[in-house]
Image (spheres, rainbow, N blue to C red):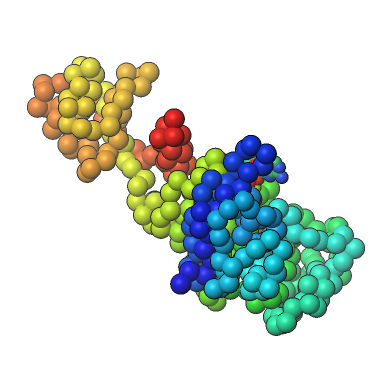
Length: 305
Ligand code: ADP
Ligand code: MG
């Protein structure tokens, strides 16, 4: 049984379909990345699943209970940090933790949690939250999300606006908490923020889930590309097309062959030899992940058109 499950969730804002039949799940203890460009519907999906917003149709269940708008009982074991943490400028980190632990049936040891999330150091201490950096606020927000001993923590773009060092720290913190068995759903518009962290990936674009897979499988789609300059590019392109390879010519007189189905430099050379074309230069390059994501997104646009 999945810990969190969305089934056919849709949400309109006026005539705009912000969520279109969205289904995906989070298994216990997994880190799931919800990835898509700005405006894709990530925050909307997160608000729907955390009872912060009504949705038009579909179902959400968490921990074997249905989640409905503002029905908080089902959400006792879900922590979240959506948009900005509710931080009071004149509270210290400890004040926040005490405040949020107050109405929790079962709460973590506040000081343990502060140590774990790194908000107990000299930078925090007696300082009020209005003097915290963004990274400190994010860490405090995550600590608050953990107060009720959650089984799942939902984080909406937790790395947004953070410097690289803080991103590394937040990532390490999430990894550490995950090792204790807590599941995470984390959104980002940048794949590379989550690529070393997430176990699974859900890709969303224009309100639709367009891909659900393990991160390992998604990364293995990261294809190599063979780039050749030849004595007769036209003949090379034709031969590659005939072989069923994905091929295009760029504006630098280079033929780019995407290495699906085990195509590699050797196969390209063999093909060129077979058609009596001289290879003047050959290089292999890896298509980077962000580009790969863009390809997936543009394919989904094409499928819809
Ligand atoms: P993301 O978090 O992926 O960037 P959002 O879920 O915030 O995207 O938004 C998805 C789409 O829904 C966007 O086009 C956004 O403008 C629209 N939207 C979000 N919230 C509202 C709202 N309260 N009223 C009207 N439109 C909204
Ligand atoms: Mg958002």
